[in-house]
Every structure is written in C-alpha cells, then in structure tokens.
Amino acid sequence: MKRMKYGTTMAVLGGTMLGASFQVSAADDVALQLKWVTQGQFAGYYVAQDKGFYEEADLNVTIKPGGPDIAPPQVIVGGGADVIVDWMPSALASREKGVPLVNIAQPFKRSGMMLTCLKETGITSPDDFKGRTLGVWFFGNEYPFLSWMSALGIPTDGEENGVTVLKQGFNVDPLLQKQADCISTMTYNEYWQVIDAGISEEQLVVFKYEDTGVSTMEDGLYVLEENLQDEAFVDKMARFVAASMKGWEYARENPDEAADIVLENDASGAQTEKHQQRMVREVNKLTEGSDGSLDPADYERTVQTLLSGGSDPVITKEPEGAWTSIVTDKALAM
Image: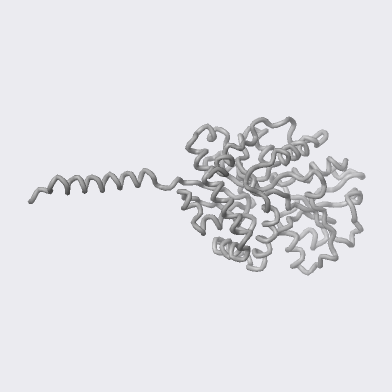
C-alpha cells in the first residue's frame, strides 16, 4: 500500500478537523411551548420556521402546540421547553407561587380579550352585569376578568349585587345555548365562532378589555430566571426573538400566506382556511407596532391591575425581576 504524501495527509486531516468544527457550530436547539393549539395566534413563529428565519439565526426550533391539558409554566419547569408563550397575569401569578418566570419579549402590544353579550339580554354597559351569568375561562385566563370585576366593585361569588361566574370551556356554547348572558371571547377567535354560528354582529354587544383601562398584557415570551445567568442562553434567546419578530413582520405583510403556513402545521386538521385568514389579520392588529420589547408602562399597568383585586388579588405584592430587556436589547442590535 502506498503511503500518502505529507500534503495529502494534511488535507485529509484538515477535512476531518473542518468536519469536527462544523459539528461544534451546529444550530442551537430551542423548544418553544405555545399557550394554545396551532392557530393564527402564533403565526409569527410558524412563519419564522417556514421561511428559514430561525435557520438563518443558527437555530433549530421545535414548536410545541398547547391545549386544554397543557400548562406552559409546568412544561418549562419540567424541562420540556426553553421558552413559553403565556399571558402576563398567568406568568406573574405563577412567579408568586414559586415558578421563576421572566418576560424576555412582548410580541403582543395590545389585548384581544373581550366579553361578548347577546343584545337581547339588555346589557348595554358594565353597570348591567350585576345579577347576570358571565362565562369565564380558567387555567390562568380568569385573572384579567377577576381584576376587571374587582375594579368595577362587582363581586364574583354569585351574590345578589354580583355576577355568577360560569366556568366556560374553550368554545362559545354557553352563549349559543343561552346558558350565559356574556362569554369570554378573543377578537381573533371565539367572537368569529359566534358570528359563524349565525348570530349577526348587530345582535351582539362587546366589551373589549383594551377599552376598560385595566387591560393586561397577553402573549409574551417567558423563560426561567436562572437561565438568564448564562450568556450563551441569552444570545440564543436574542437570536430567537429577532427571528420571531421577523416572522411576525412577514405575517403582517402576507396574512393569507401566513394563514396557509399555520394550516400546513396543524396536525389536527381542525382549522379552516377562512377562519385562519381572519385570525391572522386580527392578531396582526395586536402585534402591530411591537418590536418585541416590553413597554414598562404596559408592565406597570398590568401589575397594578392584578394587585387591585380587593381581598383576593391575583398577586399580593410587587414582583421583582419579572421582566428584563437584556434579550430584546441584544435582539434589536442584531
């Protein structure tokens, strides 16, 4: 057998070393846990993945859909995600209970939550809520409602001068079947399910939390506090946030394509093109104007709303270290 010349040997060794170097610089893995099932609410993340924005940022992102039995804070504590999508009331309540969640980015600038009522009930203002039955989501989604009722001075225990709270499933049946005078809806989802069920907009009265002065921040990105001590993790999250916001921008510019991308990722096959196109357009209204950073004023408003719960507030003290700009500052500089 002939011996390889020195140059050839070095070339082979060099190729081997290059291969090893390539393996070392392989894309960083990121597991994202969504708050709910695959739908237009999360279009920016699916677009970023489909369009290669994550790949360009040297990331290998796994997007994990949520559902009625999936609590994002529990998933991240259990090691099932690096970052989660959650509403700030839920995240701050979890933090006070010992789950050290920190907001690192806020793609949603506005709230999409509403109470939707049948006009035939005679409800025309919040003053008419007393004595009524109102459908409310739980599993952390009840906090904005409870804070709003507290601000209005309306008891939620079924007293004569209060409201009866109906624990609402993730559908609009209580309104359609007239089990509740009003139900919880999102501007981008359940409201349109009511419309598609044959009830016209003229037959409805809606109260947007965004207009109440006590709205709270919704879909934000949260990580565990201890991980932010790792510079490599912060860098990875900055690249993730930058690529995700690029995905949201693309979704605003191309809503129908974004809806198609969402549908392609919906393993359940339960979503329809019409509903997802409409959802993406409505969600775009909530992300418009956001560069991913959290406005301190929005944070403070949310905290004060949650603290003002009378004898049973959502949180009992001012949170410390519950949000940081370290990730978005780095993301915006990229």
